[in-house]
Image 1 (tube, helix red, strand yellow):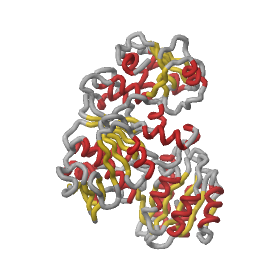
Image 2 (cartoon, rainbow, N blue to C red; image 1 turned 45 degrees about the vertical axis):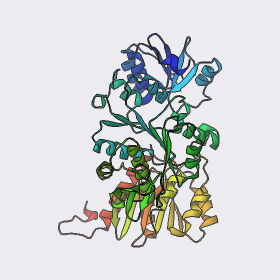
Image 3 (cartoon, helix red, strand yellow; image 1 turned 135 degrees about the vertical axis):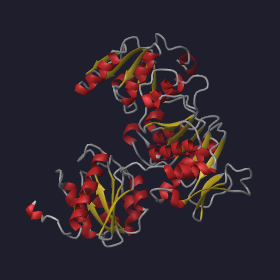
Length: 495
């Protein structure tokens, strides 16, 4: 079944939706609303899954819980949730039977009707959510009805369904002028016909290799975001992003962004300004001022790059410079991304719990001159030697936590042997208090205590926000204890 065939009415098509997560439920709702015969399968069978199943069954969807392996008989098409690996039995059986497998993103693209909102798409190892939110702010500032969708929260099929189908999102009902679309490598793997109006690969570093099987496969998935007719935006400071744009066939044009002074055809930085030398009337001679560095919040080199990437996509859609600036100023950063928590005794405490792999942690560490680094967690097989080597000179000390902390300790011993290292083996609920206390003891006025774990959180916490929240709470307790006593304070021993 090719893209032309599935663009016909969905009525009566037998579709298996693999996974009862957010995107799977959204796909099932929209498909059922289009008349498809939908069966959802999921290996889980808990109270939460039964509640979701009841809601879908009321819409005529068949739900099979406790069975994530069997392919329903008579299936014409499989729509898989992004987390399902290609080698799971159900998907392997579908592939062996010649049944097409797509993801929710590809489904949303195929569901688009005449006059559908164009997509401005973002992928990359790091920065996707920040860029998609910045972009949505710029588009809104220009007067467009825009929505950030994808991994950022709202499933794309819900936005598509809202403009003529069965959206359940209420306040997210369309139609929209434009969609800012965040895409993971998983979602792109299961896509084949996407053609965004403009798209960017922000950066590429090793990640999710256990899912993709190799770095080449991971890079290849990212490159699928560029399609014939797309304005291909690339990071001129990232070799892989640049190479993917150069290799992309049939793109409308290629636009770079850089932290250096831009050349014609690029956006970049001139002194304290973000400037555009790509979308002006004469890029060889003229540049348009877009914003000031101070408009980028929180300020860090990698976040300036995020702002430039968002601006390039916005400018490709015709957003004027003033709206780029206004959008940056109205942007509210998500928590747990280089989030300043407090200053205690002249030391800044910064929460970047979202830095769950080496590339993200390196960008975070590079934003500060002298750092007491809090690191550790699940490294997912990724190497940290290059990271430690690159940041060794700015480390005041390191506090390690989590299951794979020994691997970071070994890299520190090789590349930063003179840096003090504290190993915290605690895993109970009070572990973060000890971590923050040890980091405080290592820090001097002017330093930054930085939680940039470089590992996933699941060894000790439910997720990276929970880890970040624990850090914030520990810093707040440290700040309270460091505050000079004031009249009326109750002694701690009396509480």
